[in-house]
Image (spheres, rainbow, N blue to C red):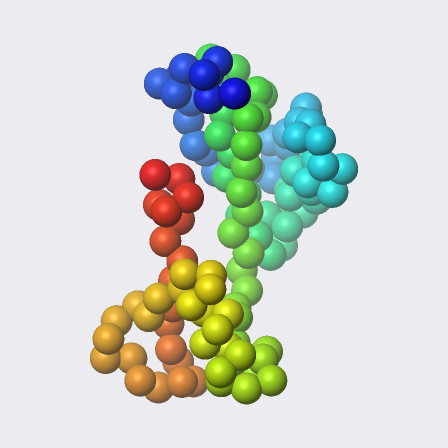
Length: 118
């Protein structure tokens, strides 16, 4: 496994900048490679998504993994009914920001990235 060969203390999780494009990355998926190599800088520049990468602290050009956070929303109007929305929300681990939020027009939800990163 890869995790057995990488010293985690030598890794950093950094926000990519549009001017510092990733030059080399190959995870075996053409679409994912294309995104980080060619499209991520424009997504960042136009505020569509912010991309973060797990890189070597010795050589930041060594990208081991990445994720992008889209500047978008999931709205109840994207679903055929409230039940479908609730199934999606529960299946994907979205939780309400606070228990007092009962207004469906402004309900804030989040996905805890620490479930993935931690």
